[in-house]
Structure formats: C-alpha cells, structure tokens
Length: 76
Ligand code: HEC
Image (cartoon, rainbow, N blue to C red; front, side):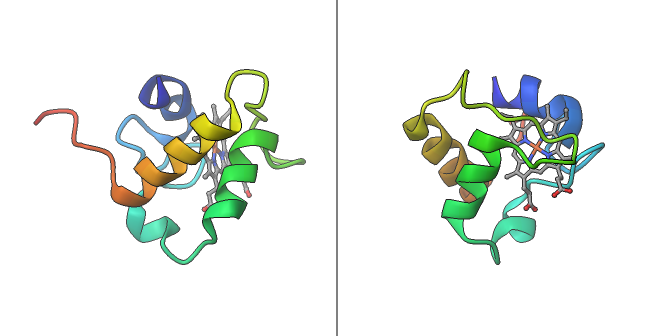
C-alpha cells in the first residue's frame, strides 16, 4: 500500500520523484513525530496530501518506523 500510494510521488523505491526521497538516510535527522504529522496532515502548499482519512495514528506511526528502518527491497 505504501509502495503503491506513496510511491506514485516518492518513487516506487521511495528514492524520490515528485516528492523527496523517503530513505532512512534522508529521514534520520528529522523528528519522528514531525514525519508522522506530515503523513497524517500533509504539507499545506505542497503536493503532499493529508492521509488522515485513510490512516490511523497507529498506522502512521508504523509507516514512520518502517521508513526509518528502511523498506525491504522489492526484488529480494
Ligand atoms: C501527490 C504526491 C504525494 C503522495 C501521493 C505522497 N506524498 Fe509525501 N510528499 C510529497 C511532497 C511534494 C513532499 C514534500 C513537501 C515539502 O516540500 O515539504 C512530501 C513529503 C513527505 C514527507 C516528509 C519528508 C521530509 O523529508 O521531511 C514524508 C514523511 C512523506 N511525504 C510521506 C509520505 C507517505 C508515507 C505517503 C503515502 C501514505 C506519501 N508521502 C504520499 C508528495 C506526495
């Protein structure tokens, strides 16, 4: 789901596209709570949409944790 929906903007391997890369190296310096609210509320004035109608807070926490750990490569 993340790969499909988020990948349309962030790239299928989350290396960036219309949106910035969502790789652990890119996100390590950012506070997890801020990333979570970026996902839930979007970023006003940018293409990043709010996901709160589709995702619960727990799911957003999960996504942030997965992103920080690094998604498993598709081909493995
Ligand atoms: C319509 C295109 C689009 C989709 C779909 C999208 N994003 Fe984004 N996203 C963006 C853009 C553009 C930005 C950069 C916003 C900015 O300039 O601050 C962004 C920023 C982010 C950031 C902040 C990155 C940072 O470096 O601070 C996170 C985290 C993020 N998106 C996660 C997600 C997740 C998770 C999904 C799927 C549930 C998703 N995005 C779907 C366009 C998208």
